[in-house]
Length: 313
Image (cartoon, rainbow, N blue to C red; front, side, top):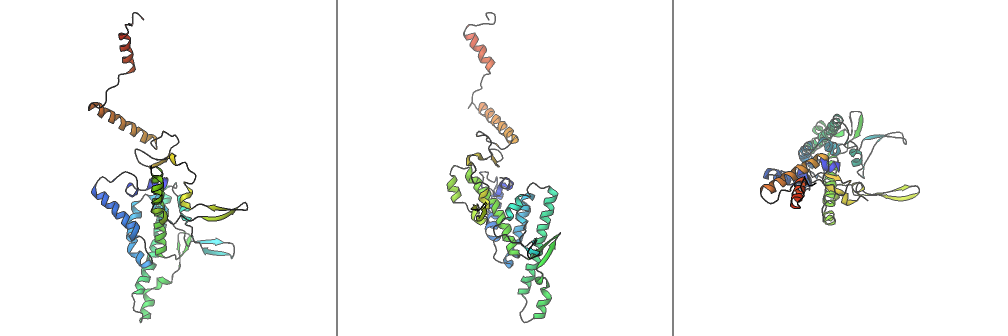
């Protein structure tokens, strides 16, 4: 829910609609960037889409930037046998679980993580540009090729105290895209759970399949073979769907501890009461609602009608 609530309203499926035509057009452009221009097959294609990746990431809250951009793919990790450091790979997209743990970190630490992630993207971009330049060099001029592509031979680099192997700009960008789709898929699932036609919306979910986190895997525990649910679904499996709700005021998703709870916080509750008061005042002013007499006045009137006076009492 935290990830989905950090998502800008323009990228959610919630009922809030943009207030003007400019914002509506902006939303359409976002969908186009995410679905098409950010999806690349090689480093050369990725180079032309990096502007959109950077632009979209910079518009997001800092926590989401960390979640999307931080990537340990091909990070050098120490192993016992054979002794030494080897690059690690992430076929099950466990990076999403790692990055979720950073949502509560201090702002300064988040900025450092984002800066290091952008530095890695810059290094991979430089290598991709070098390869693209090398491809344009005539094949009969070997000496010129060697002069223009020295960076292509660099396969390892260091950021801070961490060593990485070259992972490829396309791979790095598409993994970031999938983590962004993980957020959109999470909001897509929550949106379905708070609506009447839940199953229909779940069946039509688009970002769920694009997130790359719908693969489960087998593991052994206490001599029993078990199935781990896909990462995206592990957060909602066996959860009581009716307790997941969308706040009537801010439209954030929240867990309803009480069945009659309609808002996510005390602040939204106060806003709801003020809105209801203004609505009642407007209805009274327009004559659509009658003013209710206080209990004290009704009691006095009833006493007078029954012939009971203060003196008699």
